[in-house]
Length: 254
Image (cartoon, rainbow, N blue to C red; front, side):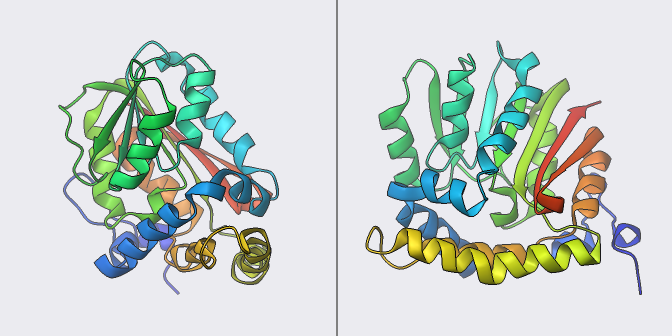
């Protein structure tokens, strides 16, 4: 059996076989974007409950790591309904770029955040429309696993962040430990859909949170993701929550 970390080959200009093999199709990607749009009225409350009240704390840990960039520019990649941007603003960050491929989600975020602090950009994380070394930090919460090309997304984040700038991923995790992975997978595939269905009933059409299951199935292990990030940024640290079912990955551009 080939170990995942030995199969990793992510250098600038190289593709990681692990990421490459699990890329979603364009149709699958569009379904994920549509699911987030559908969940908009209940996204924050349901997301917190299905994370067993750990998602907000994970975001807080990520935002705390970015405090050195408080007076600079921060990109919230996959801003979605705006939970992370709201936390950044509450902590005193004043120059936030909210990037998302959904005009629906950007319009929502633009309607609730102050124009002098929040700057919406319609784009995808694989092609960031910013100059090299032009921002102080990049934050992506519950979005990296959804992108079409995670390799390109990591490389682009590294490109636009200044030297010694910071990068944070907060997301669902896939533990390397097989026993932990079994229980996390059991919850994601069986427990989470039941809880989210109950919480979504009669509030939105269907259960948009079911799309978490296929995105989880495409995930590489936490160790592979950390190594990928380290190869691109130089330094990285992985913090596990809920036995690795939720992760906060931090990195500094060297």
